[in-house]
Image (cartoon, rainbow, N blue to C red; front, side, top):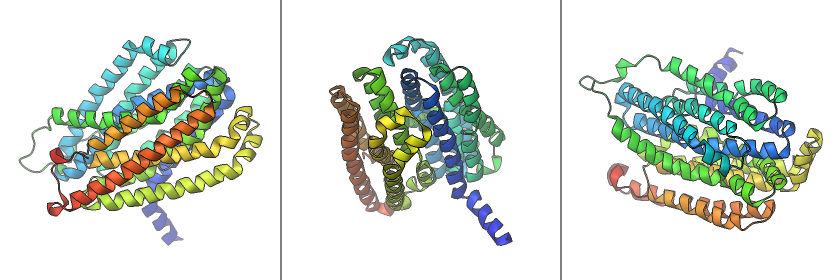
Length: 423
């Protein structure tokens, strides 16, 4: 019995804690979204889902800070305290800038998403502040491999959303739905502040007490953010296109199908989190890419088969007319989500090696989705466009990543100066 407890503690104290933490976060997050589909009418749900997708796109700033912090800490393990201080300073200032920009742009966003009121966009602006701060905190914990603290951050990113359902029951609007979902951004920031509240002076080598310059951190974070913006825009563009080319009812049904796609995108999130420090280490990159790709493919294939076999039963059990209307296509949404998850891993692999040209492929795929998607007239046609484009992009990024790692491995010691890495 004691051996089992020790094994469980080792599992939760390592990367296994990330598996559990992200599972709790995703269960609560998507549980909220699924329940919201039953509470809101079709038009309001489509608007809510579009807002969530925009929040995901905005979170590229969060993720850019996270990737920069994690990579810097892995690359400079003797300068952890200085990097922590600089990243947190940049994170707080960036959070205020993002929130303020959204307030200024709220009328334009209201038009873009075809909303009836500016209020949901103002809620979105408020949520962008803790979201951005959370990115800086998570990147520090990820780079230091402090898996226990990081796993609790992910747990707290999910559980408070359950309380948001009570608000949604009382006031079923897209603004309240967004606020209820966003409750999961406040508690993690408080925990992150508590964990990182004291600088770890012992991590600073003697003679290196000067602060880390913010400029290089900002530039690297901006590069990471634009790369992740390309990815999350690609992962979100179909619902925006659907709001413009399909009827409100059809776009609402497409949003219901995207629940499966988003679940499949975030379900293997622990793979990216755990693999990133290895992706940022030259001699471990190729193996990390292969292992991460294999893990995501295996999980995706298993879940897609489950969706194919159980979608009809789930729709009947939930008594959801929306689910029943799209049940025959849910497995295709699972395929789309798996492809997006693979692209996410490969984009992070590119960021870890500070590559640049490969990101152009993601921007090109986004442009193709917009142009081809605008010519569609049914949800099935739009889904077909997304699957086709993401499948080609996945293959291209995978081949490019392996070729880049082979080239890197052929250099002296497997180390290539960041400034010379184009891919």
